Length: 276
Image 1: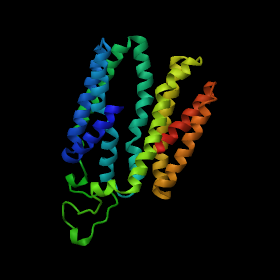
Image 2: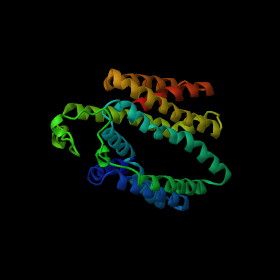
Image 3: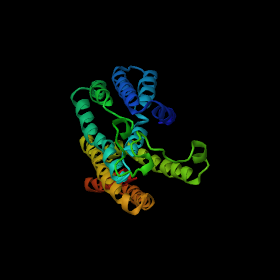
Image 4: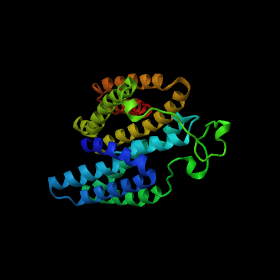
């Protein structure tokens, strides 16, 4: 996570300079490499290299790549577009949690890492070559964008915006960082310990993995529904709604002892995270 914070900033700079095609290719390369080598690790220092360093290089910037690239393609219904594009983050736990549990049960964790790493190479690396920076690469405009007549026929339309130094001096920028910091802190704190917590109070590993998968599935609904809603009521109102639901789910978790209670938690918790 710490290295991820560093590589997110570096990767964001590289994304602006080189575009998503090269960045996604390198992400797939390093993620697969990190997973495969982690499966071969036999000492703790090796895990710091293969899992901490390589996976941070490969996965940390995925949110930035998806959000910035998709934003360039849509002006109208941008919230919905971002919700659809980010559904992959919700599908990941739905597919990977039970798959990893199965592979560990059938083989061992070493083999599970290697197999998932190979899958990453086979999927991400080839698909990265299809990515384009923005619609101007294919001679189009962002969906819903209106072009002033004086720019008709131009390949690119000048856009106004703040410089990076100006952005750093705005209160809203730092408030967004602060909100997302606490939101992400609480989310990853819970997700990291959710499966061990469930098994500690008597549930099987498969049942615990199912709860995690359900959380991932709920994020998909949150991304799609809140993405659409935010286009109509605004991002701020949608974000406040997600935050209140998120807090309620965490309080509920304190008293969870039955599987159905875990399922309710997973639905609310995942939905609020996906919407945010």
